[in-house]
Length: 464
Ligand SMILES: Cc1cc2nc3c(=O)[nH]c(=O)nc-3n(C[C@H](O)[C@H](O)[C@H](O)COP(=O)(O)OP(=O)(O)OC[C@H]3O[C@@H](n4cnc5c(N)ncnc54)[C@H](O)[C@@H]3O)c2cc1C
Image 1 (cartoon, protein in one colour):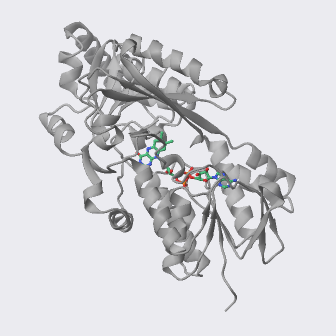
Image 2 (cartoon, helix red, strand yellow):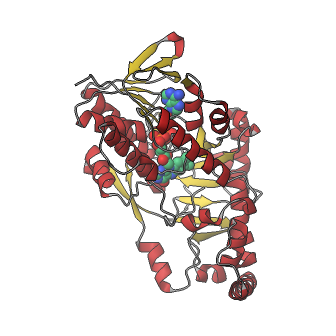
Image 3 (cartoon, helix red, strand yellow):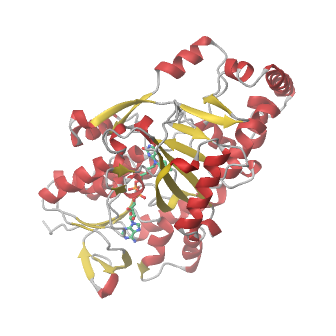
């Protein structure tokens, strides 16, 4: 049998999972990672005993295979069970999310509740007389589902701030996957309190990926960090990856989790112009997480607080101690928050220095009624390729790229969130990696491109 020596691009969940699976099947890949750390978007940057989860990573999956794999990668005492609890901060009230009817009426005041209810009743009347089956944009869907008043209050500003788009430009499919209707019965309340518990590595998601990298190193798999793959030459049989400093490595196959557009741009010989222009049209939203440790202990009984109000710059705030006490130094008793700032392609905030970001977070703390004088520490984490931007035109473009790559490069396996340019969670990224390895061995397993294509993937949470 010809020697096998696959190249893996990226040491995020997809790349490391592909490496685990290849190793399990007796093949030793080499991993090249552009950044200085493993874990990709699910890394956990640290500063001393402070650890930051840049995105708030729930370990939740419907796949038993992935669930078992997670369990096998960290000892049981390194997992914590975290009840999911999120809220939306509106008019100074922390309102539980998913929305519960009783809160909207009691917590927001009788007058506001009455306006919300009458607006909802009106939207229901309109639904009855509507002739079309479904509404295809987010705004119209939201107004009909929540009534104009509550839609404006909770969702309009949220979408503008986090998705950086006009709500009419966003498809209602997006909402169907992520937004729960208002719960009106006590059952909804009980569900909020009891149902949604997820797993989480005690010291953040990166703990798991650091453990995987260590396990791979023991098996002889080298993960080269600070090693961006810049070019990929294919001679019809063998791949030659060009790294910085004119260094090259050869491989019989490439598993790529680098952004799909950049992958196409790196190919040599170059694909035709129309393919390159589709690739160049793929864009991302970026995320800057500013973590602040406050010496004062505030009682915020939620993991996430969404902040749709235009007066707050951040779109969402993580409450890290609700995720795990392992993210803060032992015995520390303050409040550790992660403010998330969402940035569109070319957005000026991406270039802001730490000083500017500290000023921004200070302003947000003040607006939220938290005392900035109690700041002990500020840490900034930047994720440039946080969210692949979707729209029907781009989605069609991704299909064209997939078909082109498949026809011309059978040993090239794009996988994972940015690798396939879609909104994958870790479990999807991992499944696409496992299926890609299956294909590498010539098995007729599920098509990696078919992972995460169910239309109604209700996740409970309002994910940006
Ligand atoms: C804010 C936020 C919240 C999230 N919440 C959740 C959650 O609750 N639960 C969940 O399961 N998932 C969540 N996710 C998604 C999760 O982070 C991703 O699904 C997962 O990290 C994707 O893994 P990946 O390996 O495909 O990509 P990535 O994590 O992006 O890893 C790709 C790696 O490739 C490297 N790379 C890029 N280009 C090159 C190159 N040219 N050469 C070498 N290396 C390169 C990158 O540096 C990176 O390390 C969240 C994501 C975000 C942004």
